Image (tube, rainbow, N blue to C red; front, side, top):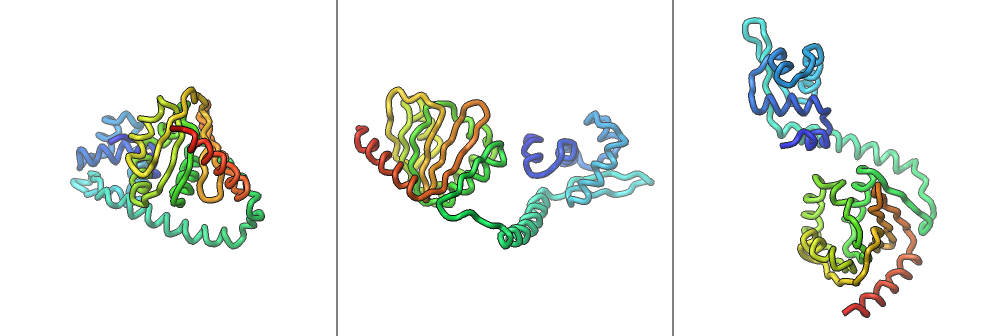
Length: 238
């Protein structure tokens, strides 16, 4: 179990370290925890109180001393569910004040981990896709290495169908990633780190050069035109 996985769920680094330590060795006092984890003792009380507020920690008192215990890890899910419930209410309010641009005139730029996650969630709402590219690095899988196994399970569960034109070097990688539901053809000498994906009425441009980013153009006319080009190339490749 890595500290980073708990950080991704909303804990700070020290909260994650203390919680993991209490799971492994329950019934510790703040002084012992501080010494074992090399955390200033004056900070330890604040960390423990924050875990108590999150429902992840409790304590008992023996001879005027407090001894702390980690609570059931399922409580992590409860906090996430509470946040999700609050977020749903906030999102509904935001939708009422959001002035969307006219259909077919929307261009979005996704960058950074949060942006890539937003793009993938949108992609998983489609039922089929076409991708041209994959000759360069696949940094999006590295950036989302903890999330991608869950995304791929959802991809498989929803039975999303896809066609992919990629480089010889990326073919096996793509086969291992998608497992099933995707037909793959190879285009020799494809080396670009830029990929183009079509799903719903959207054109997605993904670049793995340096910092990964995704540009999404929501335009039916552009999407349809490029889909025709893709079909022509697909037929020509044996």
